[in-house]
Length: 243
Image 1 (tube, rainbow, N blue to C red):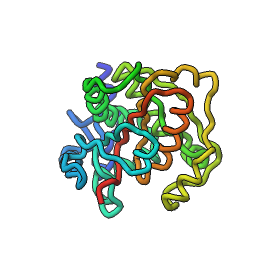
Image 2: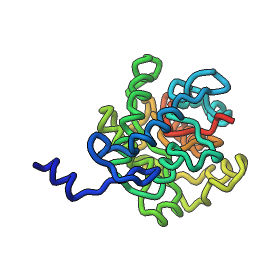
Image 3: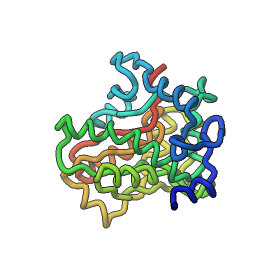
Image 4: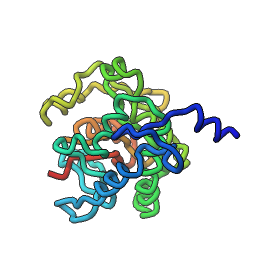
């Protein structure tokens, strides 16, 4: 009865075409047609390793420089494909606090994380930490999408989530060059010192929604390593490493 009432009194729409969802798609992010396009985007080939996006572990040079072990992602981001379902998913998550959509994306990310754990290469007990959203964006939208996603993944993967990092009032990153981005975030992270001791000797799964130049994730990785983390694995919904 509860499930029936939920369907009757709730209206869920596809994040891309805005079609009303029902049946098996009711709690998903996409309608069947848009999901088909989205799934195809996950099969795009990385020009560096020649693997599909979901299997690719490549990352921007800045992340390598800051000792991130690998970057796992669901698909490659492209501004030229802004109208396609996969990119609209990113835009939706940034602007709308939807538990349904966040949970659906978390289910997609779960195999990437469990797969990395199964490799047996991560040292120390894993912990989830999210790259913090800028205070400007927090003020504008009222939530941190990466933190929400990390909480869902914590529940799905049974991995502890620590809300360790916060952001000072930095400028929005999207209109800055790679050099400007790194300068923008360097030294601007606020660390919860009460929680900092809990990452010593542990592997950090560092989560963000989109990785472009890698500046934000790099700054976080550097700070976490300085606090005693053994190593960093980057995880994102999307990366624009594909050019």
